[in-house]
Structures are given as C-alpha cells and as structure tokens.
Image (tube, rainbow, N blue to C red; front, side, top):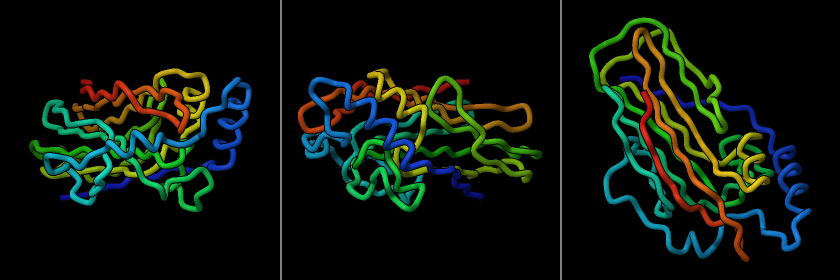
Length: 201
C-alpha cells in the first residue's frame, strides 16, 4: 500500500492581504474567521475516516462518496491553529480557524504506469503531485490543512460558493470528487453552509 500527501506552495501574506482588502469595502465588516457559533456546534465523525490520521472532533460537514474503484472523503473542520500568517503551508488558512480535509483510496486491481493527482479550488483543479509506480489496492492520497488558495480567497471576497475538486488519473482510469460549500457572513465570522460532496467520473 502506498500513501501520498499533496504538496502546495503557500502565499499566506498575499492571501490575507487580498481578502482583508476586499472585506474592508463592506459596510459591516465580517471578521475573517470561521464563526465561533458554528464551531461550537461541530461534531466528531460517526464513521471511521478513510485517513485514520484525521481525528478532528470539530467537523462542520462533508462526507464520503464512491467513484468506480475509488473512495473519496472531504470534510470542513474547525482548528484554531489554522491562521493566515502560519509558517507552515498546511497551517495557513485565508479564513482563520477553518480547515479542509480530503482523502482518496483505491480498492481495485493493480494499474501500472504514471499516476497524476489534481487538487484545487475554482473551476479546474491544478496538478498537485504524482508518481510512476502505478496504483495498487489500498493506494491513498490525503490533504489536511487550511484554505490556502488564491481562488478560494477570491470566491470568499465576492461572496461566491466555493468548489474544491480533487481527482486521481492513471492509465485508462480517472475518478474524483467535488466538495462545494458557501461561507455566509455573520457577526462573529463566516458560517459554512450547504456543504456537499459529490463524485465525478
């Protein structure tokens, strides 16, 4: 079994500056944090996650889906350690305290050749890693961290729904999932709503 973790280039100060600048134009400025009331009502997962390392007890929403021989999961969660100016990419989040977890697992027959991973907010996911060893039963990929993306920052600033796509591409096989949600401004921060996970071919 092989496990791969996605890698990203952080732009924490740029993301925070862009988001803060856009927010300042609002008559009533919303704190650039996840709502404390939302986090107070968050819960632990009822079923074990695909990625056993994901142990958050403050899950806001998400789920699991099946796409062919692949399983995908994605969750939004609260974590006070996620901040715009974090030194580590995984701890950087444009919305302080709000994180996203994604994972996939392959349960089919061995597939040789190159494997390409894509992950990202916006209309189209971006290449985020890969390897040449093919897929075997139990192959996995995970990401757990903040909303560290220019596309996510832009959508938040414009009050648009957010869309996170993650896919796995190998020889003659491709599968993925889309996590979509909205961030509604409130007096104590942003409230994640309408959180949905759907598979895609």
